[in-house]
Each structure stands twice: as C-alpha cells, then as structure tokens.
Length: 402
Image 1 (cartoon, one colour):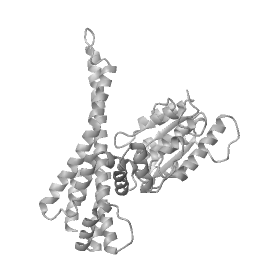
Image 2: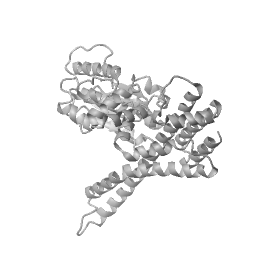
Image 3: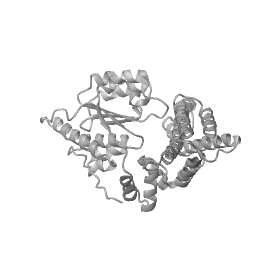
Image 4: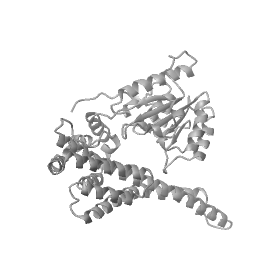
C-alpha cells in the first residue's frame, strides 16, 4: 500500500484533496492578513464559497477545516489552538453549521441564519456559515440567502456544500457569486491509510473497505467498522442474480425497504430520546408541584413539534440509506458492462467478480444497460418523492425481465 503524506493541522482531516487544501489554506492565510490590516494577494479570499464533489469526497470536512483555519490564531489551521479545536468540534460561537434534518432547508430557517450571520464575530476572526447539502434549499430559502451573498457583511463567510452531480440544484445567481472549489474522489490507497491510522482498522480490512466503497470515505469507515453494514451490502449484491421467480421481486423489495428502515431507526433512536428528554427538562415538563400544569402542556406541545422534525429526519435517513443500496446495485451492473465489453477497467465490486462474470455470460450488453437504467430511474423517482416501495418494486420488476 502506497504511503500518502497527510497535510498538517486541520487539513489532515481531508483525504486525497491536495488541490482543495492548497486553495483553501491560501485563502485562510489571506484572511489572516485582512484581519491584521495587511495587504493580501488579490482574489485569494472571498466571502462566498461553493464546495462540490462526489458523495463521500469530504465536502463538509473541507468546509469545517476551512472554518477552523479562518478562526485559527496563526491563520494556518494549526489544529491545536482553541479556534481550530472548537470549530472542528462544532462548538465555536462564530461558526454556524446548517445540516438539513428533513428533506429541505426552509425559508424561515435561512432568514434566521442570515440575520444571525450579519452580526460581527464575538470571539473569533470571522462569522462563518456552513450549509451542508445546499442543494436542498427551497426556492424561498435560496432567495433569502442570495440577498446576504449579494451584500455580505464585512466579516462573514458563507461556505456552501453540494454534490457535483447536481450543482444545478443551487440557483445560478448564487453559484455565480461563489468561488468554486471542486473535490475529487479520493484514491483507495489514501482511504485505506486513513482507516488504519485514524480509526485503528486492521490493514487487510481497511484495504477491502477502501476498494469497495466507491471513493466514499464515510462509507469505507462504516463498512470497516460495522458488521451490519457489511451484511446489508452483501444482501443488496445478491439481488441481481436472485430474481429468478416473480415472487423474488416482492421479497427483495421487502428486504431493501426493511434494511433502510432498520438503519434509520438504529441511527436515530438514541438521539431522538435524548432530544426529547433534554427538551422536556429545559421546559420544566418533568417538574412536580403546584403551578406546573401549564409548563407540562407547553413541554408536550414542543415535544410534538420535535417529533415531527425527527420523523422528517428519519425519512431522510431512510432514503439516504436506500440510495446507497441503489448505488451499489448500479455499480454491479456497470461492472457487468465492463465484463461484457472486455474493457480493462477496475470493478466497483472486485470482491464479487465471480457473480459479475456469471452475469456477463447470461446477459447481453443491451439487457444489462436496461437494468442499469432501471436502477438510475428508481433513484430519480425517489428523489421526486415517489413512495420508495413503489419505486423499488417497479425497478426490481425491470431488473428481472431485463
């Protein structure tokens, strides 16, 4: 396994993104010069940035590292000073992180954020606003953000993160006012090295996870550390050769949906209960004695609103998990096309080479391409809020017939 030298400080969190690190670290140095009243290289620093890249490339990690470097007392992102540490851990008073917990970011949420971002920094050098999944902004939220980006406060920086396969989901007027930084898919060797050195994963398991994760660093870590994630992936990759009878369509659909629901429940259950307990405690809902009836009613009403947000978050988690399964399926059919054509290209699923080659002997290139298109159509349908079960059953029917 080839050694990869990681950058120092907060930039060491980014895997295989040397170009992005060069651009963002230069901007952080220029920002420190601006704060000190010194001349900075023209164009090195600007008030709005758009970080794009394929899923798992580290867009939000890059945004957090840049935010930390902007708050760093040295301007380099040393990783040791209070500004770096609090920004990376999400506790810095002047770094606001927006992570959409539902399927979109509302106009009310964005207006409140823009208003808060207009204030001067309190403890840091800059007010930094990080918007993960900025492609989920509603039209109203985009318009609210646009006003702030067009007339930015003097010491405010907006960092927008969006997948590179759907940059058009961010309005062209916002994109035109942002400096673009494009992240790439990290090399498998770099991912494996990070799993070994940062997460303590066995080298052999790390190499396997890096080879099958599709360049998605978070997915690689989960596959390397979660036995259930490995089992779910194996179950998904049994589907293409397991659709021999009509009833298999519904059985496989049940399995896919159940796995996504279980993953969403597993991820959110502990967090949901902690949020409810914290909210009840903050509002006095667990108090006893005279005069607490009103507090209890207010607490229960607030809990109901929280449960609505949690339900929306669970729906999003379920769809994200299902989408990962569909990406794995699409990768399998792509590998079959590689095998059918005899191309000298690396498989997405090298550990399933035997199944891929068996499928290549049974299917034509045309029928394989139809199957791949069915998977992509299912992803698109779910994106447009078609009920997941209906979309999945239609896809599996198409996969069976080819």
